[in-house]
Image 1 (cartoon, rainbow, N blue to C red):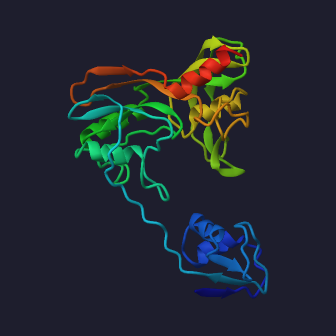
Image 2 (cartoon, rainbow, N blue to C red; image 1 turned 180 degrees about the horizontal axis):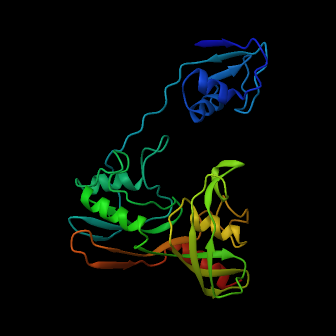
Image 3 (tube, rainbow, N blue to C red; image 1 turned 135 degrees about the horizontal axis):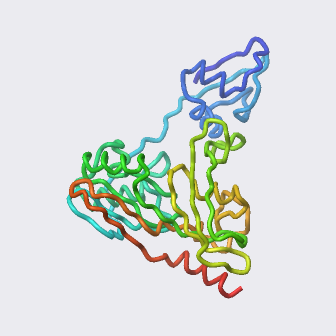
Length: 299
């Protein structure tokens, strides 16, 4: 237990002050405040609490949960595999790689059980992972089985030469047949857990879309990505007023069911890192997607 007495009004947030005093990240300080490992005057406070003279801050020892990536038997939908690459059709609700608090049941756990040969470029917790999709986004991912393949595939992503087509159902009827959204994406300034179109600490993001079918209150679209920003399609479609159906974070519309957002990585194409041959794969829409599609077809 460590005790810190504040002797003057320093007008600093407690997370900012303690991150400097204890040489730890504000994120870690925030976790400790949330879990009650840090108290002010024997009470829990928010990270935004401003310290004043007379405050007594107590800091308990804090051991962060250790991460691990262990092989787990899993029913993987492997669309293609050779000595260099795999293409996997990720199921609904599956997180791509382990993180603190979620060490099991991820795609990486299943990949480690399936193959002893995966790239190490992204570290021990992301073996083979070249790119990601959200837990409740379904569809195709390319997996690298060695570092040479990983570097080649990552370069294609960076050079925007891969093919990535997503199908989605969005709320609202889009009147025009095609469109391009060119708007930078970064952390939401008001909610760090979300992404947003913003000019602050953002990166260029470009999404092309075309209408496939119109329903009474929704639209089926195909999206083609030029960039691969976190939550890109979800953020962009919400930004222009047509949020993804069943997205629990963006758009704040009603949820039809609890199956996850109606977004599927349907088509994936890339040049094979060894043969130099272009390969393209397509996937069927999952049941969680088609069930929602039936809902709009019968409304």
